[in-house]
Length: 149
Image (cartoon, rainbow, N blue to C red; front, side, top):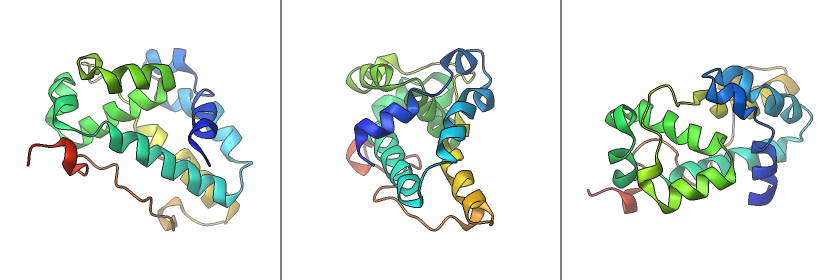
């Protein structure tokens, strides 16, 4: 899956529901489409998601993320929100870290799972059996180039 295909899928997210704080409802349209995707597309989605989250995993972003920047999970979930808001929003934040969301109400942990759940359903197994590892980690502080350590 290339980056353009990834962002087209992200565009399926219900931004109104996301802005209202209902991240599960927000990703439902995405999840529905992912259920019809081939395994390689689901792995490709994970790869692209990891790359986008990794690109904004840095100290300057965390410092501008309000209360979310103070914990590893909170900072991951606010970065997920940035991705879930779509490419235009993502690129604006990426180029200007002061635009990071400041509220803990602006999280989207749910975006981490729909492709894994689609894979699990297609394979009659649990999402915890997910076999693919992206080329980069999206976990907080994985991008050592953007952290001051």
